[in-house]
Length: 332
Length: 295
Image 1 (cartoon, chains in turn orange, blue):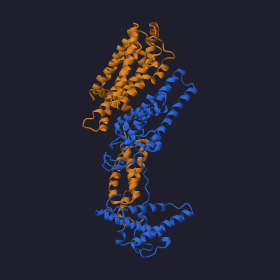
Image 2 (cartoon, chains in turn red, orange):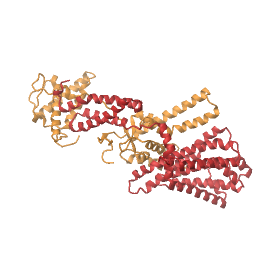
Image 3 (cartoon, chains in turn purple, green):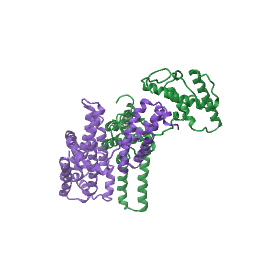
Image 4 (cartoon, one colour):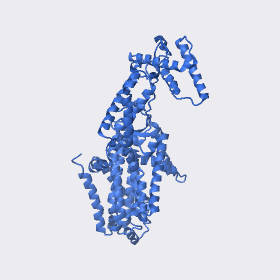
């Protein structure tokens, strides 16, 4: 290499800074492998500082240099460094705590109109299902999918229905939990949330339909004089599970509302803003479905007494409500 | 969003170029992820079953929990821990970045992967289960799938719905490789032993485009030729370029074949110094047609 004085201007520019760029390259490689958490203070500080220097160099080089290789290198180096410097720095444990303690309940409180709409839709569906069953019991087989009905239908006697309600689940608690995880209601919740984006209507329709199933199912049992028993049977997990579906519906509605009524924003922007709370609602719904699965898997088989069933189910419901209403008020 | 979809504006205000990852490479990464996680979960279950480590009754539950984990949670946790990359994305060298140039937020990663369930997994399973007997539901499934694909194809940054909501998109990771400085090897030494001198009117003919084309040719010369045939071909190219340049700039002396490379290097350096000097004075020349600024 010649002496600096002999080089043309852009080569001098490069020669003066090349060592810094190489160091930045090494730091970026380390940050990408082990994360910035694993670096000591001096290195982390240098990473940020050298990144800013490289960004400046890039801006200058674009003006003064015609060396394609140099421009490409600086462009790529700055881009890689940018990705390392702006990597998410939070640890997963801290994220979970903040979600549970502050952000999730706050999002639920903000979304109360949508939650109300979700619960109302489900209730309306249930009332409609009830009324239709009262008119003609054959509606039952229209609404209730055979897999869910477990062979229970308008043809079943009261004794059969009672046996199903108090059956000691076969195969033990965890097996029931396992089969449950993938079952009907989890899928419904996912559908309801995802469908909301397509302008609300599908989410509402699915929630309404879910209410119809519920209404017809309860009506069948009331018809056989098992009203309180089915209430207890459903309460154990249903309070948590049906609420989860309503919450997923509310999340979907929030997205759909952003698509339908974006206001002064563009639709993409409105969708992005609505997504902030809707995602939290979906996570809360997912959490509740897992709890519901545990309740269904264990509690429903273990607790056979009607009063206790009611206490467990509605107790869980009251805990959810308390969490949503009270948690994180001070921090938020 | 304005203009070039490849340009991302970080908070420092120096626009950076990130090539947007296309649909193909993203589907590739998705398939890789599904295979990796699927086989890992399967292997874990088989291991547990083979070693009788847990009671058979628990096995079903563990399997269910594992297969639930490799759906949304794996993608969220992976992208959180590896800064926007899952294992599949690492293999394909692509990465999620925030659309506005800011840092990736947890919220964005959760949201884009929650939507993956409705947008990627569901259409994928629906397409696999298309059934002519259930015409109505098949048509609905098809419409949904087409819709999900259309969203991606219709925007410049190839964002799916989840990306739109989360404010993210997927890029190719740029690879920083610094090649040597060509001008440093042959600084202009007019009158030197092997030096070539150029007068400033001889350097008025070409612009940045021609300069960078010449740079590419000279980069090839950095590597030794693989065999005699390639050497001969390269010499032919060099000779042709030297003749064209000589004719254009009225360089009277013939250049012996051995000095072709040295001549081109000297010309490259002189031309670059000249153009860069002009640029400093506010006269940017993109190519030999004198088109003005541009790169």
